Each structure stands twice: as C-alpha cells, then as structure tokens.
Image 1 (cartoon, helix red, strand yellow):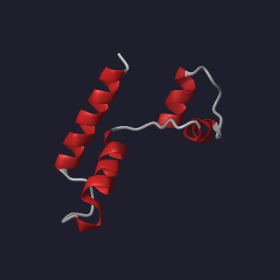
Image 2 (cartoon, helix red, strand yellow):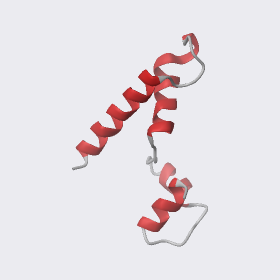
Image 3 (tube, one colour):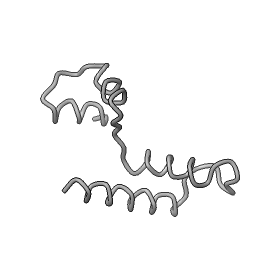
Length: 74
C-alpha cells in the first residue's frame, strides 16, 4: 500500500489522485524514513557530498527528525 493509499484509507476517502496535490498545495507533506533521509541528504550534504545517496548518518538524522515531529503532535 502506498502512503497516499494509506492516507486516503485513514481519512475514510475513496482513492483520489488529487488528494496529495491538495495536501501539498496546503503546505502539508507525507514522509517516511526513506523520503526524509533523501531530504536530509539533499539539504545537508548537497553537491559537496562524498556520497551520492543517503548514508546511515542521513537515516539516523531522518529518524530523529521524524521522532521530534511526532512528539510535537502528541
């Protein structure tokens, strides 16, 4: 199941290809460790990185950021 499908199911909606577009237009996004570690890599490592893909440190930072965001919503 994709993240979009999981969200639509949790929202009690029928699958709608525009759901994610409406959320993003409203400033929201969905992420998981993989997408967050890619974002961490792109922002903090950038073009000077000695590696092309997120490494373990990027994944650790992604997990920490996700945990902090989840805690903020508790």
